[in-house]
Image (cartoon, rainbow, N blue to C red):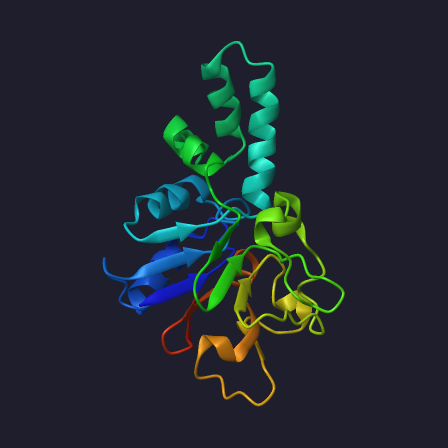
Amino acid sequence: MTYILSDIHGEYELFCRLLEKVNFSDGDILISCGDMIEKGKHSVRLTKLLFSMKHAVLLAGNHEYDFLKYYWTLMRDARDYDSVLDKLRRYFPDDGGLLDWETVDRMEALPYFYEAEDYICVHAGLPLDGEGCMLPLKDASPEQLVYDRVFKDPDVLPRGGKCVFFGHTTSMSLGGGTQITRFLREGKRGDHVRDYHKIHLDTGAWMSGVLGCFRVEDCRTFYVGK
């Protein structure tokens, strides 16, 4: 089974409870659409757990990208790599002591999108032309993919046949409570992932205490709360 979620934001315990709820196993696939870090208290602990998972596809969100920009700035003038790591650890006030170079390197290597046969995963949004058709992902900048503020709008419905999973903006701020929001194609029932234009995943876990995920094979959603 394939489970997709976004914006865990350091909520380590919630994430572990969600894995238990869906009976996640080594044969399952997890896709995280970015923003693993910050806001919650266990950013590094959560990130290291995600990196240790056998079949996890992890994408960069704007919070990972901001962290990497800070890291790249430090490295430009670095003479002592130990001092760089010490500053990076202070970036995470609650569990930064767990940060190591392997985690930093793996974070730097995170992709900005993932494309499967029936769907695309991204953090914030995709570049579209004036008619809503998707532009080539390879030509999109990281900034477009992690900071986009237009894709969330209900009337922005990407054309092209594939469903787009995204997060970035909390469902509460969009008037959707704490639920994963589906944008169904006209005339479709919602039994298959291709029946949807896009699916918004950010349940605002760090603020609402609710974390959800979407299961691709049967289009079911699962939630846990504090």
